[in-house]
Length: 627
Image 1 (cartoon, rainbow, N blue to C red):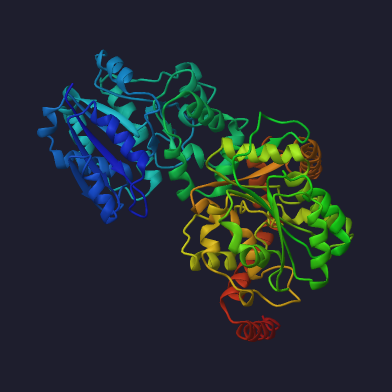
Image 2 (tube, rainbow, N blue to C red):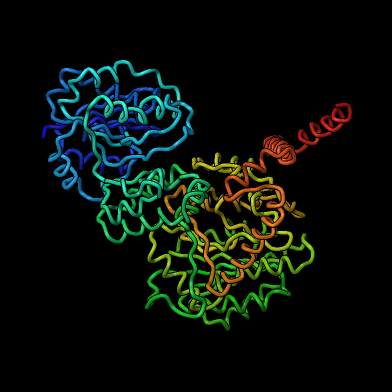
């Protein structure tokens, strides 16, 4: 068959990612002409490169989404000229693929006597979540992300009128309701024949959206050649409402291990365009490693260092026990702001049998953050992998056992045993896009408040820091930063390059005594994982198999205790319904309003000089008395 392709593209920065070229290269094998319609004006280099692989490129404003982009492409070709082709393929940039060659697909579909076809379909939904479909529900329909029209169909008044009379589409909901979900139904009712390559009739009742909610089934067992990019950023409420949450991760693992598709094309896009909390949830980026056995026959080929900041002499013996678990081929760098500890630390280090060790006296300004970014900075690039630790008390919280537990959670999951450390090193070796491993945030005692408020009063100052570092990565107040809260973690030094390139000095950090929250130190703490993501690597959680027993018990106990109270006030069967009912409760409306005031205050505090902020606060409090 002679085919023409209309590829609809959008990416807000005007960059064309490599996954697009992969798709276009495969489509070129089965088509004679490709029109690339970009709903954004491309960066100059991207425009040059895309013109090398397509026959014509159209740049336009993002008006009407992919549906109007398709119309633009059809009208460029012309309703008469398009009949020179046996098929017209409409495909948009919401798909990764082909996971498998399109050869089998085109051969199978070419043998069918039909008017139009697609790869997948969406099953009927008894209601219309978009409130834009004229039927009041979502009919079964071929998904418009990849739909193909035959010549005999393109010559009909039905086809031509649907495009010529396409109403102005103002938003995503209208793109769905005014075209995609009604086109198949109307065409079939008008007597035209349609089909899909991946038949999912047997999945009716299991899911409404097989390509998203059962992608593992479609890829593994039905050899679906495409997957939705949104699979890696889908609202986890939706996933957990319909499934146990294993679909995307299982699908990805299969693609990575059993196909020729380069998963770096996936990582290159999602790490630059999706919130890391969404990626982590969907991909379950949690590594549970044995504490007392090895996961493989491990040979350390990387150059490795342990950097430890020591402040509390009374914690030194416990810290040394963990330090001693490191492989003897590693280097040790210890920083301390206490001159009286330097000689004692050198004596301790000389007995630990490391490959090499250094004890650095640093300034007492910037705490653990300046220890890493200033004190140890000259040596960082000498290593492939680094573990950074510091002794910790958290004395602002009582009882002090809270802080002891936090310290244990960090040290035991990062340096808990020699075999655990070997397993961590091997995990980096086996996962080349893994850039950082950290324990989960603390959630016991008074640390419980961290769950759901991970940003605390640090969203604005972290945003400001990222802006100054020229880092553009999607972050959201409502979604937690995947960063080491506690500043203890394993990492590849290259993933923090933008932070080290800033060439920090001790004077950049606040003097002691330091505030417990809202400082530059706390902003940097939350930025580590974001910088890692910007550099093209993902941060993840790590726990040893002994500790994870505690974590599961604690989390299940917390959820159960909350539910036992909430179920007395709300009847529900799932998490999404529960949270919606709570948000609609007057108390929670008040709480959300209070939270917003807190966010505004934090933002103002971050951008105003301290004397100005105090003056504004004084005026506000005075005026507030008369509100």
